[in-house]
Length: 602
Image (tube, rainbow, N blue to C red; front, side, top):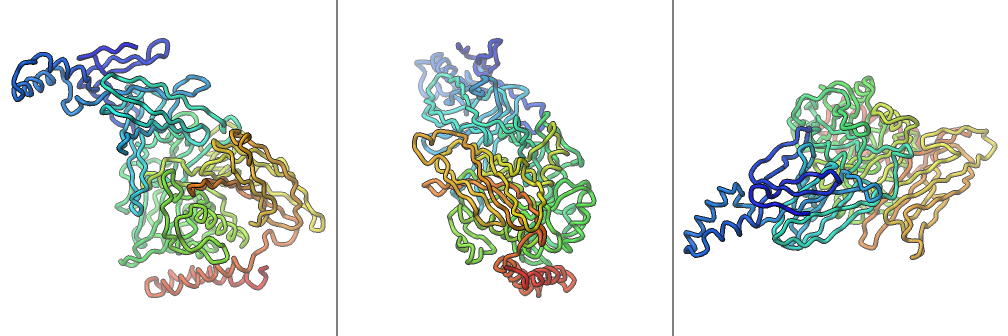
């Protein structure tokens, strides 16, 4: 490849043979016509040779005069003076198998730790910069550019850089060390795929996002998130309806899907109630989400039942958000949430930083009351979900990142939903609500029980054990050390270690098959997880399969019901001086529910 210089230096295009051609021109810039695209300097690329050329025009002038001449000549050449010491790096990210351009997430980091952000080099390309640091952990940062399937460019001072490229959960991460000097650099960054979920009928979603819909097309494509649900309304005050909140995303959003392409969509009518202020004072109550509703919500958080009835009447769903909110135990009997954020917004690509759990885990869970172990936080969420399931509720698992607020890529934690027909937003929501799903922060877990996907309900005779074949595959970029577990009513009934040997550790796919004897009514699920030596923990977890063999559908455990009852009891006392008697009535209703469970609990 040959690059021209001067007024033609820096512009890029794709040649007829697909090769990258550099043809730069200083000074012009265009914004992509596509919604949400970052500005792209289609031609504003500095050329170090412009500096040399300008300097050569006045080799014998005194330094101050030389400087003035240099600046004059740079202006004549239309070269931005601030960029004269930066070199263009032009690149294209491709699928290694097909050699076709693909969208992806790009990190560029210098040896001094500084991050740099790329721009699209195509007039119809998308580039969305993300630069976020945790407000409670300064070491937790996320700095990347989400790029569409077009050429990109980044301007870098001479030096050594690490280019890291990722795309969702189905491709290996690529890292490349690049030395940048005075001359333009051209890169081909090829990603290798190890799984194709869409080909198997599985489509992913992030159901808790806090970013302007106009900025989401590039991240959705870059991380292959098929369904994105931004919280366009968000209230943090108990007496302020979401429609009147100052935290809302500005814009006029219709209650209809925004198609990015045939298999990627944004639905913008979603709301978060996250109450930190009650009765005009700092007093946290908790959070829950309303997704897929039709009209903006003009009612406050309390009473909860009224909000839930309004949302469901419009075809929407209620999401617990997280298990550790102060009011979550009380919320369950009154609202009966549809979803539980099992892969929640405290799982990040960057270092784990959630040490304050707000509502500590009980001692019987064996995970402590808050700390730096990501595994403990995951197990706390699992066991809380199991407790709700065993008490007779059925919140289906979902995943949300709060991308836009937290330092995490869109879809780092995601929910995959299985569809029997072609992708559509409405079919995906129906599948999510039916529990034909699994959530993940890393591995891909494809499982079936009795030949049926998660969410299926089996029935049988009370006196006859039911034997079910549980089988499937685990796909993971780093497979060695993954543990697979089958659970019944929240207790492990089968465990196996996948790829324990060094020779087998390079495999990215492993099948499993086990026959499980079910002797009573209840639920079955599969999970897999991996904990690295640095403490990072990733997991996948299916939704339940249900078994009705007569008698109660679930068996309540005394320790679980007692824990939930005590949480509600504590909240009643904590809120007594803040909430009105009418507002406390739903808490009292929840407490009465758990107390009725206790006499018959195991």
